[in-house]
Image (tube, rainbow, N blue to C red; front, top):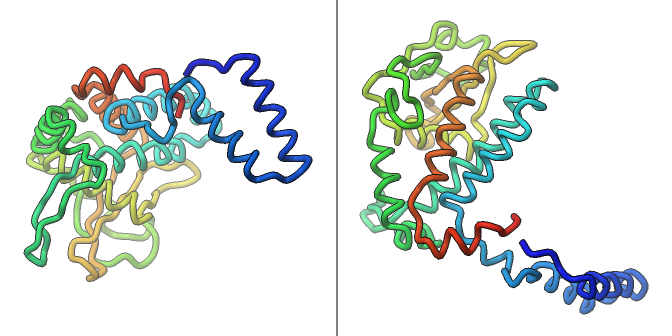
Length: 254
């Protein structure tokens, strides 16, 4: 974003001083409006949550990944990145769909699913592919990825029989199924870890039947999850969006 001029900085400094001195809310809000509209771009008008936002998440992961590993916080960092990096573009590209009551969902209120039709087509194509061998997991072997049903959710992953020798992810499992499972686990806080002091498995739970307290698990080692997450964010970053959207927000800080 363009840096404000010296006069602008001085003016805003005076406004802030007056707010501190007189506790003037009108002056404070005037200060805020100028800060967020400097550079001629309103921060509230940031629209590229489909490709640019995941790209920024990827840069954060790349910039701080090594430091997080050094401090033993790499899983924390990945979960911080995965929550918005997966959920936001997935939700915003949801179009109208039938609901259980027979009515139609209107689609995400942002309208991104309609404005970015080409990106949505590419995205839907990814979701329909088998996870193994896809752009987000190019290997044809499952690595540490595992999937299965839990008989109950009492206790912790270290004590659950199904997670002692978890079943491998099936070759026909689609990207969409894996991503929606992650979305549900992240959105509802159904994230667990196995192992200690070092985490050897990230466990994500998603309900099999609504309000039945019966869950499926998706499990993966931290290194494999990082490989997936980097590839996912890179795939999203490269989605084809209209040139005016990409250029308009390329330099906006968020």
